[in-house]
Length: 267
Image 1 (cartoon, rainbow, N blue to C red):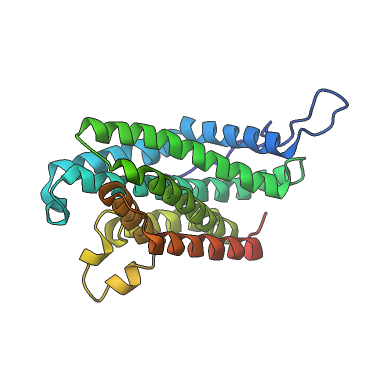
Image 2: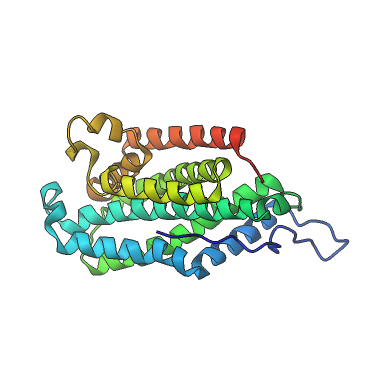
């Protein structure tokens, strides 16, 4: 996990203006530039890099060389890879973005950028772009490592998996922003790390929700972590889209977004 660091104030992405007349660049350009800036800031941060790349690689290796997943399928790597990709989504969209936003809020970065041509909506969209960019890097690195370990995902499940990752990243980004916008940075740091650990261990990410104790299954199955983990396993192992998992993630994304809009504090 990470202790987080604030995005440096004065991001050039938010205040970018066109050369002619000093007018602001179009919103899509501003959003993409700010997203690229935030993505590079995340990837250059050593602690964020550990959370985004090193820990998932260690988890993937441990799951392949230990018998933990032997009861859930014939191939350890085929069961482990989708769960680790879900873990990557949680680490980047929820923990990493939540902590970074929390400290940006403390140091006044959010308040400053919200007054630039980027605006509040552009700032949030830029963060979503940054999450998508970092997640793409994770997919290449973690997916490549899994392929070298013998992973053979179902070709028919690639598009359903991409859809689930997109909706899952939206849900966890919204949850991360909700926590960062309502709690103090120290509390955000503690809550996001604790939730990440709990969901990774018993939230249906690595071990399917249906394999958990009967008393816990109904609760865990409606968590976004279980929906993403089980949905990716259905797509990449079975080659099918799990509509229930997709609906659960959409519901979490919508509810967390509405809550963040209602209660997010910019300073």
